[in-house]
Image (cartoon, rainbow, N blue to C red; front, side):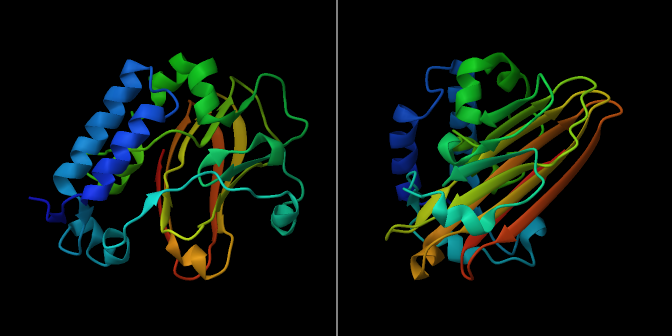
Length: 252
């Protein structure tokens, strides 16, 4: 038996609004994934220290805060200058979970590689996304994963095709901001590295702003699929302000 706090009412209201406007709303399989995930979250709510996986981590600061879905903020390239990384193959920027192509840099990459936002991939490569999204995480076990799946809309989508070696790292920068009200984002990342391919993926999570950034909750999930004889190096960096809540789930 899982001991939890059930989902707050405002999450139910947020999900209803989100489902009507979210990217991929017209895809039956994605609607079903979101609804099943949200039903699971409503059933179990947030974990407590009575749960085995969370016995050393008190998440009451998250469960007792009335977070609303974060909107994409206005962030300039100048604000991100200090966060740049030298020697990367490409740099993808996400603002409150939403892909920002105008702030991203696509450098020289081997032919055939797909890098971009998950929301765009749902339109251009929906079959590939459907084949993998949600097949590796366990939303029945982890309510944060279920919450992410319920609000899954955008994040990074990377596909390294068969036998391709990517020399320079692929850098994924997730920027969280708050504009007054407590805000939450749920980046969903899908990384596919086919057989005999090699790649380095860096996920970095930062927050911008003053004390308002303390009202930020970022709940990310990454599914990384490595084919036979693939070599993948994965790194996660957090540079968030003190008090910002960050939950990250990685399944390989």
